[in-house]
Length: 308
Image 1: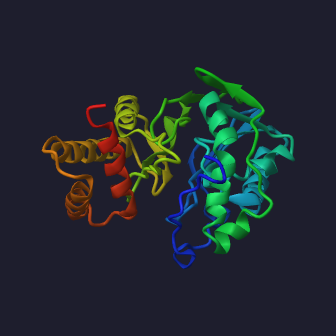
Image 2: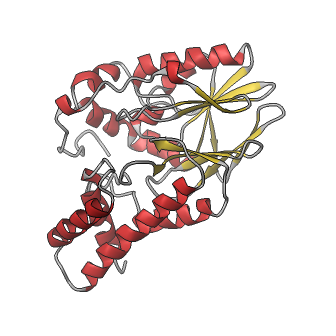
């Protein structure tokens, strides 16, 4: 997505809180494994700090320089001289657009090839789109550049931190083209990025014709595979941490969204009418969830994938 190909459907900046990472709320969910929770704040991801005897891996950076500085400071304090690595679950700005701060502090940034391609091809356009939100989001992105990874892998990457191996695994196209999960096998912990959220409707970045990489069909297949792994703890991209039910809940929602959309598409119903009916139905079934604006995007994506 180039600067000329940015969706012009920006939210009201007054509706967006300052996406500040609150490192004071850090939680230890396993030995030498910390999570900085997002506390339900929009555009703030759950961030991980995973330690071994020789090195520490940071998962996600937060949005912009100041947030990344806080995360880096905490990670450095935890590391106590151990080598630092960074990875991100996908290229979206609140997850990856603080990586430049880590590059300035000799941290090795590791991602899968599809995510690296997204950072290069789509990162600048998304940077400008997020700056277009104005207010505190734009302020936090002042001077930020799309990051460049140090290590790019293809089929998978096992990172030996010393007495603990962390597995970085590309999932294939789902929420984005370059999604990656982070597995900590000895602790039974899985970081999903935005493949899974809790307390909200699945985020479909479906912005035709500018960005159409999200795939509801493939995302559902990814969640089937992840649910079958049965992790002890799941760290979603946004929302509260949980157990394996986080994965099955998202899988079941994606299946519900697909089935309700395709049932209406089979009857030759128009997309606008499908959106109205499916939106009303899903809000009735999940009245406590936030992010209702993503239902329409999900319906649009699945209409395009119907009988494809």
